[in-house]
Image (cartoon, rainbow, N blue to C red; front, side):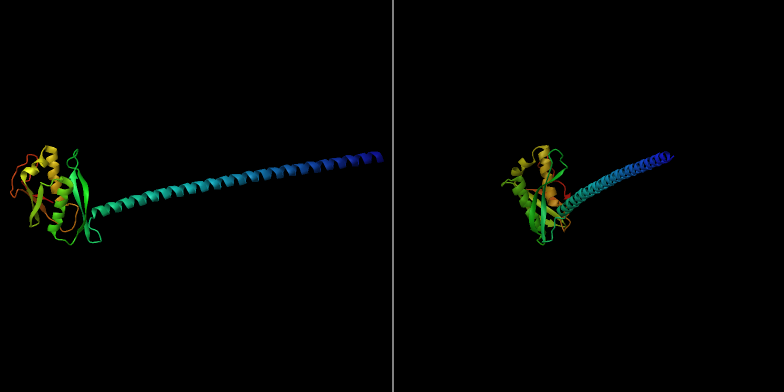
Length: 223
């Protein structure tokens, strides 16, 4: 009888120890699983933070690039405004020597800037500065003289001196047309918003005459 009771107690003890070990193992497994899940959650959160930072940095870079583009456009617009407003704060004017495209005869081109003309100078001196640039920088012909005769009622009358010297500059339909418009548009300075002439009257050797086949100067050219 005592032997049976002893064996029963031993069996019960072994069972309890086994259950205890199983519980510990289960707890260990649960803890390990919990730790692994926490690691995965931390990793996912970290990746999300990195992705978020990457997106934010990308947005910042895009915004920075867009801002730089906008600033470049604004700067270009300011430069264009400065070119249009050719009277500057120093009291001098930059006029334009105009010509026209040989492929598109109505497309005006700025051939040269005529710098540092005093805005307070007389209208006659300003016109003479333009005539000088036309002769020296465009026609480049010592024999072909161009003179200012008068300015009356806003009309500047100029004289092409020596018809024979000027004839070569008005030969051919395209060349004659372009050279005529170069003289007229340079003198009219349509982009200048200060006090200026209303029109241009062109004489040939002091007379109102039609002598060039491809360049008509019969009428007054108005601004």
